[in-house]
Image (cartoon, each protein chain N blue to C red):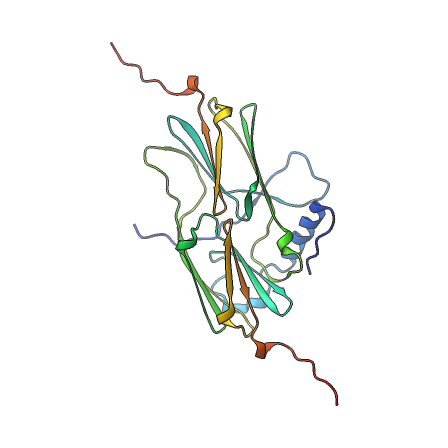
Length: 141
Length: 131
């Protein structure tokens, strides 16, 4: 669990360590089309539910398409890098192109209640776990 | 031309001149730089950085850009699968021609920062006509 410490530098470092610790774990197993696919995805658990955070700098909201079906989520779109003509380009590191990635989560989710937020080039998908998949406490009679 | 399929660009870490007391990582934003007769424009990808958390600084012809991410939203989240790390961004460039510091402007959209550095009058190219 990531908890924020009082010192912001310490806090960021502890988040970086926590992210490193789960780097390409087998949680998504082979169900995810290719490690190294664009866009890179981080998946977190929040209580019973999940949050996927995806970096898509420079992608306009209108160029982003998200579909959910059963336990798969498909993220596709187009990233444009366009400049006026007649410029002299000194350095070119940003890349443009299309992307299409499907992630399959290894739990039952409720695809109708997925919420998506896109802000500052970061997409956050709030993925609720299906009620039928949530653990139940069994009372001993 | 058919659009190319995007590949993941691995984040590169900033090589720091001085070490920080806490070894938190700082990343280099992917950057495009282009020039026109009027200005130099620097375009940087800094996903997760709000426009209020960007510092653009020009000193001794060195442009330095800092972008701080808001990591408070990660509080209470338990990572289960990760493919990238997060951190603040920082990058510096030596500027080639004289810049009019009073006219620098910056704009942030969808995690991409555009900094326009207009050239000082004496640095703009002049067309010399042969009489």
